[in-house]
Amino acid sequence: MGGKILKYFAGGNTAKGFYSLYDTNLVDLERVFILSGKSKNEKTNIINHFIKKWKDLDYPMEIFYRASNPEHVEGLIIRNLNFAIVDGDYPREIGKEQVGAQWETIDLDQSDRTARLDGELNEVTDLKLKIQQSYLNAYNSYQTGLKVHDEWERIYIDHMNFDLADKVATSLIAALFKKAIPVTHKDSIIRRRFLGAATPIGPVDFVDNITEGLSTRYFLKGRAGTGKSTLLKKVAAEAERNGYDIEIYHCGFDPNSLDMIVVRELGWAVFDSTSPHEYFPEKTGDEVIDMYELTVAPGTDEAFAEEIANIEARYHEQMKLGKFYLAEAKKYEDELEEIYCKVSDHSQTNLMIDELDHLLVNQSNQL
Image (cartoon, rainbow, N blue to C red; front, side):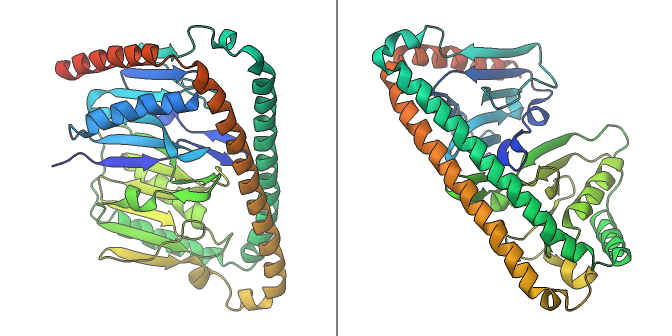
């Protein structure tokens, strides 16, 4: 049977700034190669080399993508080989919680490339400042959007029946764990990720990929503030109490909220299935839980229609601004990459790839 590729984001552009969730996915891996260097494209090309090579050998792998350019990868994990290779440059936080004995940083700029930039140093400095400002503007837009979103949530929170919400959670947890046997011989392994991200081309998600092969999927519907994230936190807590390994997917807009819980040992996922990652049942085992219909006073939408429309318009305006600034940052980053490409030493990069290939083949032979 061929290996499966799991796709996700390990870092995202959020209302809290760039938010890093790399370490929980790298923890306990023996060999982690952390790439450092000016060129993002060079790092992506190196990671793609290993993806192609080991994909052809049918190894299950995890690939995480760049929120700054979702067509490009920024990391690869092959757990069967206890191996990862990842872009480790700022703003990512890698090795903050753990650094294994065989974790290694690889500096792709070992020789001083700036010496070969000649008259372009001023342009490089200017582009870096523009990139920094564009990201700051994007994060400010998302932060403003989150405050508007809080207004949106308040309408529904004020008209929500919390006793009914508790009953929905109790019923769902009973269904999820009705055939489960608690795992008492180990602690849960918890991986924290993003199922989607704000990107220069708009929201991108990997819901279909992440939930592929699961027998049961619960689609949480409902308005802002109707308890979807709270319900997911309760599901995660119950899974941890029972000793199951958990994939926790945080909200790519507000990382303090949750978007999905997956327990592969039990074959299910529960996820927020509202915009910008709205999905609908399409196969046996799919089920909708509508928190608005089940827990909010009837007629709330109609009673506050004018106020909701105003809030929604202001919210979407901030989301559009955020996307604009991310696209602006990418434009400047692309210009910077063109400059770095002129001084890239591909022969040195190829030698480094050959060396890593040799190390990884040796590691695979020892397993």
